Length: 528
Image (cartoon, rainbow, N blue to C red; front, side, top):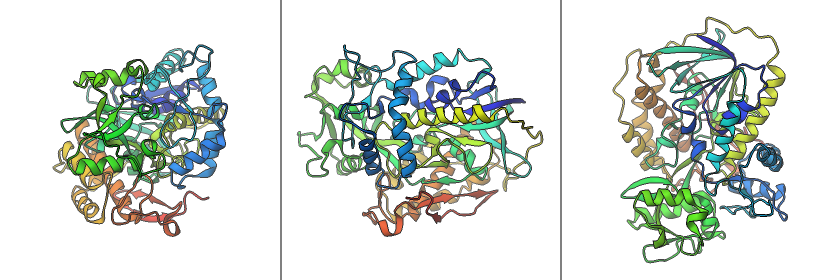
């Protein structure tokens, strides 16, 4: 058993940005499912959005964010984060040579989908996530009072006897033993849930663990129906092999059929740089008809130099860049919903926080604007650190005998194969949804009663399946309840936005010890 001031679950950009900005007198422990460098953030090819250009302004960035989010966003949150973005980038850049600049030392700003200005800063061409993560890892090593537990799978939050405060977490170590970690402040930074789908850009570790843990502990979860599918993943023989950054289309690449016909003409005013849900749906329509879609990169000069990581991914999978075409398909990329928090990450239970993709602040609305994700992680990490630095010195004694959840079932039921979970989610709760398929999926998920399985007796693989089933049910239930199409949620049987019924209204899930109290509780959680 260990006890720390701050216990962080996860090791992406939000987690490390938070950790490096805590003062040295704060005792910190990081638990990560695998290694520091296997986080989703490390894979991020795209950049970070900020109004740094001479003709740009945060007001323009805000408008683009609200438009992409289909006005489901919390406008106060949008204003605060977007206004802070330029200084966040400048402060980070002072920590090292992270971002790409020209010979004059000016930012090399790129264009991405649904942006009205060139405002995306990149690092190493298409290795922004890696560049930022390496900088943070270097700074992490310089910290005092910090320890990192790798290959440590957190699986159950510990609450006090009154169930009013989170005081720690249970985890399984690499040796297979169960260990309890206690802390004054417990931070979930485990990312989203991309691995619930057959095709995804996400790291293999990203299966919704943190959100599932929070849900099972009674924390409010919100907006789970909004899943962003990235339009362009490398697609070979029915499998996705890696992300092809939106920056490629920002540099002039277009989506075409096998015979070179552009597919986005007349579909959206921004054509290939339209919002991700629009572009993803268009590619999906062609694939369903058996027609392959390609990214035509023939007009991009010095592609290898501009996109070295993408070039490597393609050539490793037998695609020659010189041919000018990259076969693509859409895949799960980002979760707009998650643990319901305020802007700095406080959840509905004292002592528990969520930052990064595992949280839902209302910044992204129904569909995240490209390159706003790393921005959110950096913002939340910095602001939560400032708050913890001020409050961590307040006396607080951690309760030693936490409340014990009593599951309905001690024995493990026969769980489905992981691939079956992914395939059925892709087929029934993927890019295009309808009532018939959603109800099929809901009935299939209900039979497992995943919420009531005793996780102490499960292996790590079985626990991951339980979490996947819990998250799949949250997504499916929310998608069935929201009878409209908005952002990352598209229903073919309700193809339009229904502002009179759904504008800025959220579906909040709240679980109480084996019982879903408000699965379809709808409230105006994100007020205008």
